[in-house]
Length: 84
Image 1 (tube, rainbow, N blue to C red):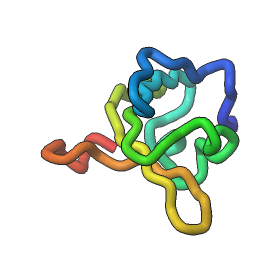
Image 2 (tube, helix red, strand yellow):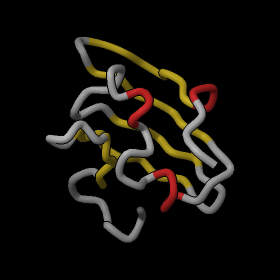
Image 3 (cartoon, rainbow, N blue to C red):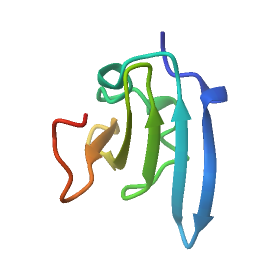
């Protein structure tokens, strides 16, 4: 299944920072893949945070946008990389 806009919501917004929530019946590996959030890349900013509820686990990730314009999610600093 691909990204679905209806599963993404804003929890909080202030000073150019957004805290997002995304929930879907997909694994964290699928949701965390490079480009998964490309459909909403004009809404997201580098450094935004997204709470992801997948079918197999829940995690908190930081948004990054790579040079070709792909949205990626990364572990927060100081968190275990195995929680992807």
